[in-house]
Image (cartoon, rainbow, N blue to C red):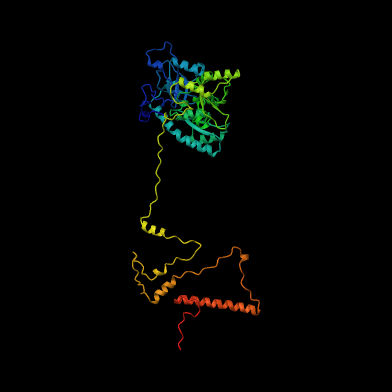
Length: 505
């Protein structure tokens, strides 16, 4: 959360991006900055106040310490202070008479200040502090892994090492009480320092970690907000905000603190609106309040007698009060449209919520992307020839035969390479064999829909009738075989011996 120059170089404990007093101009280096305006003026304190405010870890934590009269420390100096066991290093954020006002604001009594400033920090102290800050990230990752192995319902949000690296404070969040006695044993064995566990809330966790809010600025809790007040959904209802948990929640998962900033202004503006004005009666019907514009002092009504909600009519607060007075007397105005037109004539010629905005607002034409067409075949001539010939139906298995006039004509030459075989001349037996190969297939009798209705073959029961039937079927088979042989030889007759050559006498 620091400025750009803070990561470049550090000289005498002061980042190069900060001013001579060590205060960053953007507020990022010391997140909880307190502006000491007395130091910018040539005014000396008549009675010096021997208590200073010191911030640790860029404003993540602040406390008050006593300063002896012989110690020459000022606002912005890095100082070494005493703690319960060892010492810590922080920056003096406020000094002088303003510290008294700050203690009064935080309700911190002077008698509660127990520790004091030891001396101004030297280069060795700053190097040791930098080592402690560098080790915090690895310690946090390792601590989370250990707590996960122990199946503890807690989340470790931040770790802060003391300036002398003798103590480490772990800040965690949990829904209830956590028994972390076993966890402390593992931490002490792993990190070899004194362990302190401190439970904080979700808002305090986001204040320590920092971040960017939905407004694009740094979080208020990590920059200037010191006290956290309770926020309820009533604050959103007074401001006519949609109760959307995702939009009303901040980085901490709780309701945004900024919902309370403008709540007092909305509360004062809402008092000017009439009470019990959800419904008003007119001769055209009963109108229901749909929404209100608090700062423009407008109330929008619509007739809801029909199934579909009608047009919205904007009425001022005074007009609604007049209609309420008429309804109490048993009278009704003609129509809300007349009152809305009168209100619109008094205001500027700007389109309202329920007005026709034709001519006022013109939407740009919608740009549609053209669909990519599939690549067509290059050989379109062959495809057109194929489409000209109708396809045979799937049910008819007969092949299409060329007409009888074109059978003896030679085929046109194609672009295919020659295979080395030559067609036999016309009138030879080879031509008849080729024509016999193109014979149509034998038609099959259609199957009956019901197998029970199909005719059954004759059964040979013996006797003359059975012998006649068997002899008739055998003769039919012999005739059928003869016709097949004649077709293969090139003959077209159907009889058994019609195309046989005459016998030699």
